[in-house]
Length: 38
Image: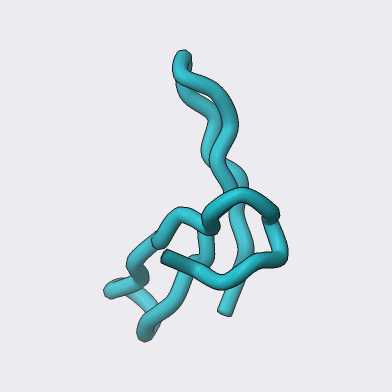
């Protein structure tokens, strides 16, 4: 699992990036960057 940070006009979100190369998905991590992915 890789961690990422996504910035948008609404603010910054932390995400967990998972899956095989070329088919990764990003799921937002609720509240704390090292919390459980939701």
